[in-house]
Length: 256
Image (cartoon, rainbow, N blue to C red):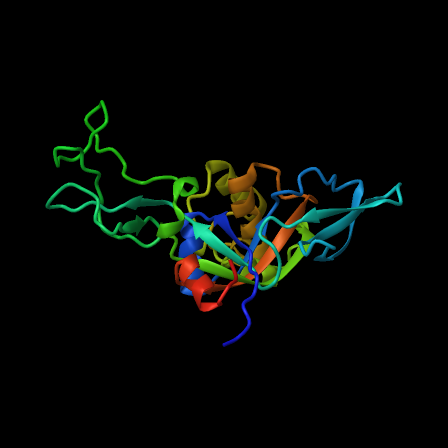
């Protein structure tokens, strides 16, 4: 039997269209700013990544005008660690009893194609005060560990400024070049931004813009208009495993 290893397993939030892209094999990078927002991008330089004396994986920074270095641990660990995906979901109820299944089952917005409803205690469809059906979907932040079905094995972790992303890395983020393949529902300002810069669909500029430009629009639709700048981000390069995180950990013979 192989020697048990110590592996960090941390939840990570992911939007439904990004989960779907990962399952399709179109996405194997993700960029996150958690823990780095205090590192002033105009005043801080990133020196290196690695593990500190406590075994934590992260990055060392230094102010341009100072000699002291400081360490920032990556919230998801480093190569070899796991990030289990929390996604938009709800617990499935039995159509016969109106009660949750035992053991529990989950349905996921990223891949569910059926029309789904939520039952009340009497077995009827729950409705809002205006008579419309109440949405059964629950935010990803509330997804419990037992419902996880997608685990990311980290292969590489680095730190980059978000606007340094290349066209190739944009494609690794699941971003296609054509607008028709743009994921999610971009806000109107994003549509206006594309038209203002590239003209209308069918034009040479519009049809031949880079995937990097579509990544900018996706990033800003999630993080806010103007957020695609020189701020620092963790770049997580991962191998997706379509299994519950505890199943993956058990197979890796992780020590408690």
